[in-house]
Image (tube, rainbow over all chains, first blue to last red; front, side, top):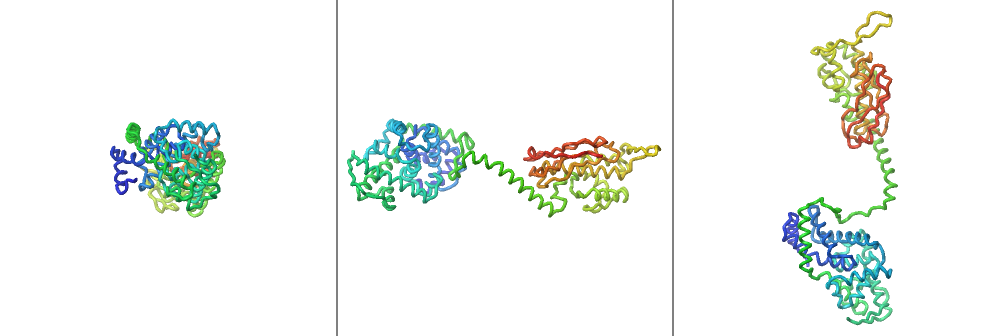
Length: 187
Length: 316
């Protein structure tokens, strides 16, 4: 879902602090941002999302671009806040394959709201573990694509990678998941 | 929970398979189908409605952020921020960059000086405010002043500035020199300053007036060298310095304004981008002129770094 042709007007109104415009931008992006933070194992996705949107609104006058770019801009803020969150927990750059880290991340996952339990098709526990065990950059690329709805070039800019490198990250992420499916013989 | 037992050995995923999976398209093989289901679940997560209480709290924070405006707390997010190198790399680079910049500046200044001669884009106007009188060698200046004096009290042909009226010259000089000139009625007929200093005769005779030529030459020379150095060192726009601030006094050494304008110029880096034409601080000569005075640069952006003008001596 996108705002479409009205985006420019919405952006102008949001810059001047009109509630309806701010709300429209929020409704458009909040589920993806919160979902991204949640599936990345953020400690408090909703609180982090509040920071993301506050920061975005504060810097709105400096933003220039279309809707796709705006979406990528907001997700880049979300990604940075996530890295800060992980760093504060000593997890930045860590593969969560360490049993202790993984257990903590899964526990945080379990504490989250009902939205995360929409992994009906594959099973929440399996999905959580499979995603959290991905290397951080692969996980970020995959989730920015699927949850964030960003095209590869935008994901590349968020992650500071080249487009081919980002494509490779996504492919490796899917490959890793595929191997896990095979190994686990999911049941 | 759905139960899937994919067959073993499905091998490496092809790019097209990855695309299909990420797009949520159903795949034929069990692994692909399972991953497509996972992707679909993820999409559901991203499309889930945000609880109204959460949304209300977030929107409230957004409104507050709007009121705070740009520049509130928190880093400014950029979409494409280049990755910073590690801190230790930065620290290693910083001195090298500074040295490189300084060297480049000196080279540029040298080139500019060679193009423009001894006059660098008006930055030496600190000595002669309007810049009409380009600084020349001491002999040149002295000769000019002598001709100026000899030509009579009203006008003079000065190198680089054509014919000038006496009063115009006096006005164009720095505030420190102009009063010196205006002190002598011979130079500025309208002024009623004190008499010229006396100079004792070596043969024991009665002291005579200081020669006017010496007075004015000293004043001009002193002002030029002193304040020019200050400009170059403290806030010049690219002059490399190099002039020793040898403020020559007005002959007898008793003219505080005319002599002893020191100000550095020996510091080759001193000509950095200070960006001001404020002359260096003038140290007043005291007659014997053997003191070293440290010229002080202007207050340009880099003045604090570059204001180490080191005038050699004031007067002699």
